[in-house]
Length: 309
Image (cartoon, rainbow, N blue to C red; front, side):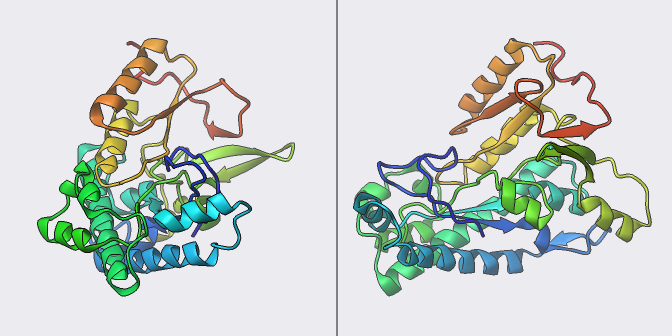
């Protein structure tokens, strides 16, 4: 879990004095028999972890009530009881299941995963509202006018109408630090590179993506042909984010990596696609626009998707 108290961050558009309260499910941890014909995602275990995560994050609201530096922050936190449950390790999950990141099949499967998380999270928040009361600012008439709520299953809409413990429940953060600790990809990002150089503290370290070791152990060796940040079609990355956004009531923080040769017309098309597809935000990073922190190996060539506008 990752708990933050920062206003404002890209994955949670907030009211004045609002605070993030974020937690992330490691999707790779729910894959059974990876890299085999029997590879599958344990949806039952994932759904159990989801409802426990909602309880955990809701409890954090009460735990932190007297730890905010300003009274206005404390009041905002308790008024909405906002939480932000998300995911990390999505690209690892897809690789373990034999699905190519950026493919239509992978996008559909990822959307189904986040849809299930959404429905379990909302059912648990409605259950907590019946036990402990809804968030103080809850207005059933106003809440049910939300297109996001209207897209829920009819029986779940009826549960929401009776009350929700949390004004918002879902958010996908970059999970930069905790994903490194967990040894998986951050948020919904693709695998950055199979091998790479990491710059830290004035030193350079040679590293490989942690999933490679598990792949070699499961398959006996070889090098997998997993899509990476610089080989995935950037437009498919935006479509993936848009598909998941349909099931996330707050926002998603994700970065589209582009080679330094990318023309501005491609960047324009990416932003327009994100807007048309319903993304709440988008970040584009063109290589060389800032000092390198992580460098993929071998050197990246020209992205075939970005050579022309």
